[in-house]
Image (cartoon, rainbow over all chains, first blue to last red; front, side, top):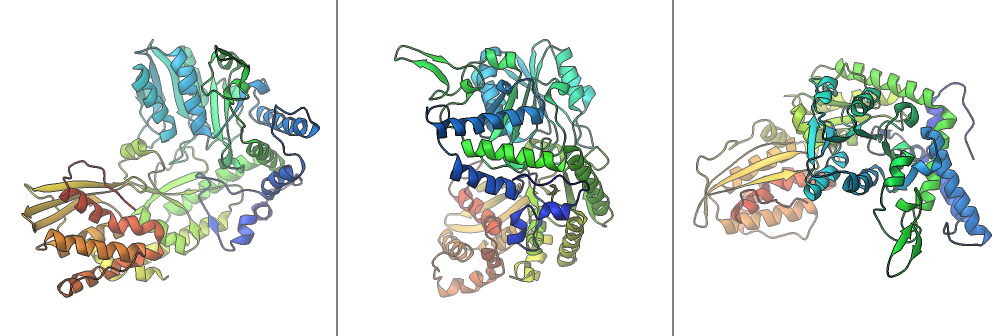
Length: 410
Length: 153
């Protein structure tokens, strides 16, 4: 099933692994930051799992259920290896990064935070790393402290450190900004937070598809990502949590599979990770996610990172060279996404013109309204990249910008 | 569909040089419209004299379609009655969303036709809400407005 290891990286060959490009000839897909396309290995692999091995997990004594359970738990081991976590029990399967953050807020946050305690987030966060903490603020009376970005839109580390007080219990920060593709120096973020006795949650939605993430080297306490952004299916994501933290956290959803015993008087609960996985999970999603991670490994994660860095740099250069185009936050370390403005043309109009040229980009606030407000922009156009993109896609992007400029020329 | 049909000269002109693009000093009614998907924001101001729209203006930041739509709307609605405005919006809404056509009285036909350049959005489903945002804000203003959240497609 697994594609062969390639000595030399060839986006054209990679692209042939993605049926969407066969079925949509000419598609220039530049919206991987929103969701990645799926390789044949994942699409066919999920179908094969349903054909050969499907049954509910952790329940049946029959061989088929045991086989299905084995595949599900093998997927957990694949994720553990992918993140270099110490133990598979530190990998909790959730619906996506959003659910992972909500789980931490509602289980860890509600148990270990007291009124007046502080949670630091940054100005560049996705709504998914803002709203769960606002819920907790409403519920518990915690304080939400916002670490500012600098003029380029990158995290201001000195200002970040000044956000910490003796009441700071958690810093929840993105690994890569989804609007600008800025890489946050997360090792520094973790060091600073730990120096102040706070835990750290990192949002790895944009990082896991592009960087080699090692949670033990980072020493972060929680790490979340979504499967669908790293070439896996929708509906599945991962919460990594250090063993000791997960052990101390109460369940957040009750149901089957997360219990040891249930009586009408009281119930007792499983150890992590199953304590946090109530009900029948997205079994095929989890298995599909493992296939996607294997697919990335088969290409090589260093190769993926080099390719994305080079393509992002190329796109920034090419866009910056077009008169009337401004790249947001150009100059900072950037990977995978480029937000830009074209003078006199609203991003929404750009996206419509682009669509007519078969160039799929994202226009809008990218689920980061406070960040957009800070940048002084109601909306941006964003091109983002995956392993199947190449310089021809950037050329098509530039061609579409020029086409829009012709239409809107005075 | 050709982009030129969507971005006709009249749209580009109103998009770049919107008419009645200012706040009213003492509006009798106003409402904010916001499309959280794309960040478009519009505020519609009204000076109502009973059922009569004495003055209407707008402010905001948006794409060419939403700005042009707001601009054309203010030109057309000035001097109309609320009932006439309702008929025009109904007819326009039906055209851009592909709903059942709404007949307008003869005296409103010319105004309705002025909105035709905007009906190109019906083949661009993601853009329909751009064309209707100002109209929804107008409706919200008439119904009490202020900061009331308004509906978009």
